[in-house]
Length: 204
Image (cartoon, helix red, strand yellow):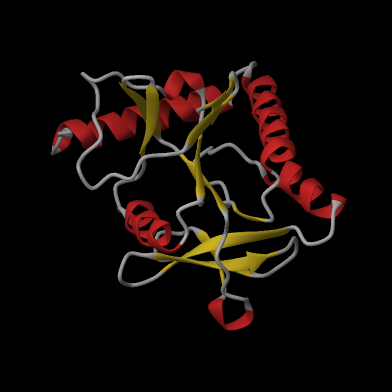
């Protein structure tokens, strides 16, 4: 599929980020966030992963940490990880626990310190979306993530899926962030999401 290029895509991202800022300050935001966390809890109960890669929220991304920390505390053997951006624009994942010291990447994103953390391979990755879209081929629904434009997740997912075809990749966002084909379409190098998690449920 062909994607949009140039200023139009940059403007789309800026518009979506501005909308998310306004949404985070709105009266209905907390209810939507609570519903999103509740839907995540339902998914975890059904799929029962053991090692989840999450993210430290920036620019008003939904914060899933409270629910995930509770999930870890409920049963031994459950672990969390955070991404670390390598210079080659791939991500490594290091184990994370509440209270661990984080360092700022060159983009200002809090990351684990590779020197003091364990490098691990998650079986489930949560990916925050600036926007997202859906494509349908026959009865198969596929979901695609519009991110910040660095391509880190797409490169990383392509590599991880070669060694772990059962890896679960879940986009995280809100219903209003869904884009239609006139706004944005995934490009050839974009990696599909296995699920899309919004306040209206888990889309698969």
